[in-house]
Image 1: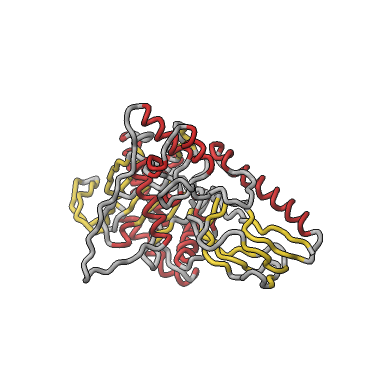
Image 2: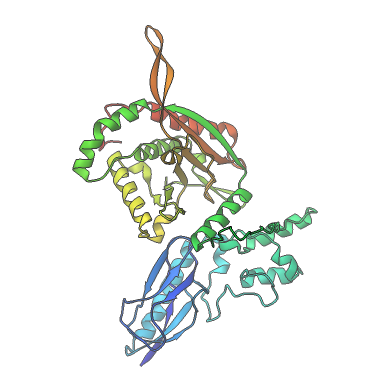
Length: 430
């Protein structure tokens, strides 16, 4: 008999830890190879983790509700395969190599093979509910930061955790004569008639990320109204035949995505990310699509290399990820790697909105509802008044790295592409 470690697997790009939601098996129970043993939650999706080896679940190392680093042991499995331990070690080494390769340079020191003690352990000297990594605790000790002071430092990590960069940012602010501390929320008075609703895990993650983004990026917005009459007429012409042939609807979203992808090629300094004082110019054009879920939460699946697809291909991909998002069937990799995001607030009847940037991206666009309006139309024989289909585009961008001229020109270029849409456009040609 041999005892092998079951480790926390890699569950997507830039995901380095997960929370144990539920153990599907108890200690002492038999498990088959590839049988699901537990459910894990990341800040992207929830997923089941299968066993790489069959045998008996000898010991659970990480309890429900606790956090484990990718590559850290989470359970021990007793197996009759004598070669399993050697195979498991090779697998673990390969996975850690993958993690190190995928990790950003400034996180390399944080992603090391773990002992059975979680790296995200809670400090015994800290009174708040947050977890602190050994690196953060060592910085606090070196800089003589008290437990009270540490508890007040704003965190940009998952669920408000303090990262290495947060510590350095805080220390630099102190050197400049000021300290950035968390504001204490005011107590809300609750009467007997009020209903108290506990945020679910996904809503807590969304709330934290929205606060982080507003704190990190200098949000400004530019607006353009586009004449999308040709798009409306073209879609009306093809939508019934498309639905009969493909078995699904053709929405306006693929057209919006295609216009944004074209504009990103023309203005590549919008297709960037910020890493400290560095600007990362992205080669791939990966466009996130905000999808509202039945429970009221929001998720953003990503269409990778969106500039390479025809309208027909974009339609199929967008419909597919939207459907699977609503059924919680997305893979973790489908929620990562975005370089720009589109939010269709028009689907809720809104004429415009000012969306919050998805970090570490620097811009996001909201498209409003399409409305019929009287408009001045230029003709060879003079101006006339006609009914046109109009739509507002709202472009929020990070003023740290995108100036008003660039942000304004980009959204105007997207509007130009929409207004130049031809009634002879083919679904299978870009």
